[in-house]
Image 1 (cartoon, rainbow, N blue to C red):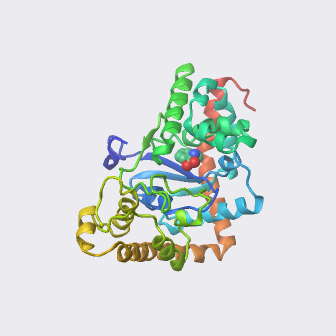
Image 2 (cartoon, helix red, strand yellow):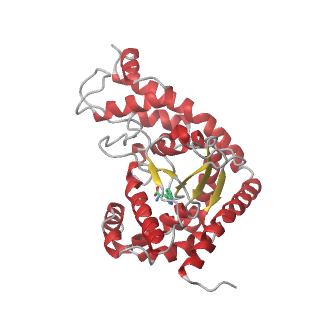
Image 3 (cartoon, rainbow, N blue to C red):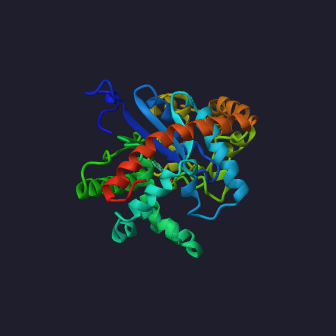
Length: 342
Ligand code: TRP
């Protein structure tokens, strides 16, 4: 994004639009928290914001039905627990707004086989799930383009791994606009600054991932205080003893990043604070600040999850709002293509 301060510039009567989505597959990690969830609130005031729980995307990989349902409630509640006010942001579940699947199909027909074949995530995921390389896994970027283009989103806050998918959404929008007349806003990815990239606690050269098999590798947003502290105690470091950022010290670098993210202190300040103190003490301190950071989120989350009926009512309201905007775009698309209206 070129200038985040200027969401409203040039057209004060019309706010620009932000859209993002999180898949309800697996437990969300500290990486998801610092990289996306905790930052989404920054956009609320200046933009029209849409945040989606992308359940249609999740079924490209086999899901246990009861878990998918639970994770959908959880991601929805986490959006709110992480600071998104459902009155100020449109929070909705993708499968509740049928326009996504519909535009997804249409955009499949404006997306090239060659383009999709080049997607790194497709290559990675088809290697990882070799027994289930389904068509949905392949055309997933066209559905993601539909998510974005339905709302005429200007900005799409995502992690660096999703940049390629936003690029293809731009290409699809441009292609469609060129084939007919301007229909879609061409979106831009907004990638948070480097530094917030959280790595695995066990293999610190790898990104912390919600699908990591090793429980100790990831801190989940909903982990208990004891689990958080225990996992940090076991975090992989190096044979040095000095809490300093350095080459080849991936474990310590990662812990310093996490400590910075939790406290707002710079890496230099963290180094000073722990000057002359050992790794053991540092790991314990990281665990504590991290648990402190996540505990209000968890409290709010527990409160929301205790009342599924109210969450359901919010989902319904969100879906209605989203659908209003989405259906306008979809009608326009259908008209341009030449579908008969009734
Ligand atoms: N593909 C994204 C991910 O796996 C989730 C997603 C689905 C998304 N639709 C989107 C992100 C639209 C941004 C915009 O993280």
